[in-house]
Length: 305
Image 1 (cartoon, rainbow, N blue to C red):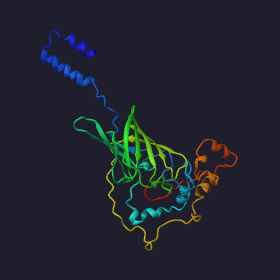
Image 2: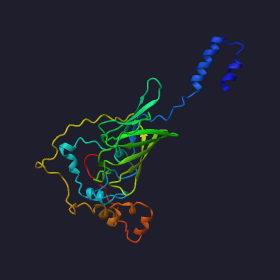
Image 3: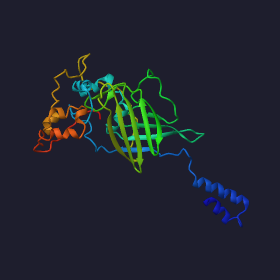
Image 4: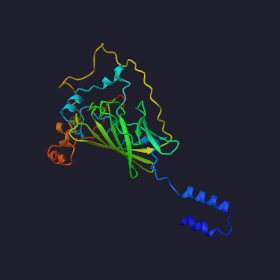
C-alpha cells in the first residue's frame, strides 16, 4: 500500500524506466526474507558472575547427581588431566556454560539461498569448532561415533535458537570431577538481547543424574576479545612412575569437607542430589546452619579452567 501510494504520487513526472528502478529499490529496502533470523555471529566475552567457577573439591551443591557420580567425583584428582595422554582431550559441549571461556560464533551460509546452513561455535578451551546444523538433517544412529562436541541440530522458536545435542563422549559437569556419561544429551536455548547472549542449558544423563540439570550463562558482545585456536602438544608436566593414574581411593579424599569447614554447612548439603536442589531444602537447614564468623576466602582448584 505504501509503495503503491508513493508510485501514484510521482506518476505524472517520472518516466517509466525511473519508476521501475524506484520500485525495485523500494522493494529491496522494505522487505525482509522470510527466513531471516537473529544474527548470533560475533565474539562474546564471558561474564562469570553466576557461580564460583571451578568449584571446590567435594562441592556438589546444586547438582542433582546420584551415588555413582558422587563416588567418581570423590575419587577425582586434578592432576589426572596433567597426564600426557589426557592433556589434549576436549571438554564436552555442555561445559560451555560451566567454564569461563569466551565464545566465537560464525555462520555457514548457503551461497544460493542465502540461508544459514550451520552455526559454528568455538571457545578458548575448545580445539574443534562445534557445528549446529540448521538444514533439517536427522541425528545419526545411536551407534554412530561420539565426540566431545557431539552432534547438534537447531531450530528457531521465534527469536530463540533451540539446539538438541546427542552423541557426546564422557566428560565433566564441573571441574571438580563430577562426570557426565556418553549417554548424556543436551537441550539449549540460545537468545540474543542486543549485546548480550544467554544460553540456558538442560543436561539429561540417565547414568549420573537423578533429574535433568539446568544451568544458564551470559556473554557480552566484545569484538576486541580474541578467541584463537588452542593447539595442543602433550608434554610431561608431572614426573610419576609409569602406569600410575592420579586418583583417591574410596574414603581417602582429604578435601571432602573443605566446603563444610569454610561455610559451616552440614555435609549432606554440599554432597548434591535431587533432594538438596530445591528451595524446600533450606527449611531443613534453618536450625542447623550457623554462618561463619568471617567471610571465607574462596580458592578454587588450580589448573585448566
